[in-house]
Amino acid sequence: MNTTPDSDPVLVFGNLTLGYDRHPAVHHLDCEIARGALLAVVGPNGAGKSTLLKAIAGELEPLEGRYVLGVRRDRIAYLPQRGELELGFPLSVFDMVAMGLWRRLGAFGALGRDEATRVHDVLAHVGLSGLENRPVGTLSGGQLQRARFARLMLQDAELLLLDEPFNAIDTRTTEDLCALILGWHGEGRSIVAVLHDMELVRRTFPQCLLLAREPLGFGPTESVLTPELLSRARVLAESFDEDAPVCHRHEHGESA
Ligand SMILES: Nc1ncnc2c1ncn2[C@@H]1O[C@H](COP(=O)(O)OP(=O)(O)OP(=O)(O)O)[C@@H](O)[C@H]1O
Image (cartoon, rainbow, N blue to C red):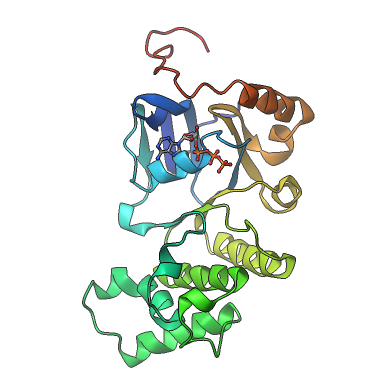
């Protein structure tokens, strides 16, 4: 595995084990993600990909090991898998997207004319002009994801964590949102995205982490998405043990 140390990493994982009720979902993750990386996290269902993003976002404490952030926590933006949360709230598209300014304005900060203009600008950028007053719950899946990306634009984060951002999204929207991600990457932001579409990963993401509870490959995408490693991930996925205890092998100096 390529673990060449980076002088200024955005994230460092040190023998990181994550899980629920002491049962690991990710274990023995040891690598460094360079600042400005455009990294895809791939692996079979149940491999621990969402769990990893959740932990980096601060929603899950490690069971063992650690991770170190190279950015302030409030400079991280986390886009969980498309949830029902937004759909359940009686929010307009404008208000939902304006929540991206929360860090700047504070919880009760008033939205001035400049901020309102910025909200309109990002809505135009994602192709949602004219839908400002629509209740979020009436948007199509693709429109909702565009709105969530518009909100991300306002968050102005240094590290973006995107969990299956193109899940159940049409090709046109996927292409548009992919272009936004590439733009963020071009601005020097670091991107970590969970993805299932291997062709899209090959085309767009220069770096990849292949997870199957344990890391199977990390580095340039072409060296990670090999038939051998993907097949190994599938085999491991067939024997995922939901009741496995935390394994202390690295701490005791044993080899993996
Ligand atoms: N809140 C939770 N409580 C208990 N177990 C959980 C919880 N969330 C996830 N898990 C378990 O952790 C393991 C890893 O799940 P995770 O969602 O991280 O996998 P994933 O790689 O993102 O899968 P998928 O591709 O299917 O979304 C699974 O066995 C899952 O059932």
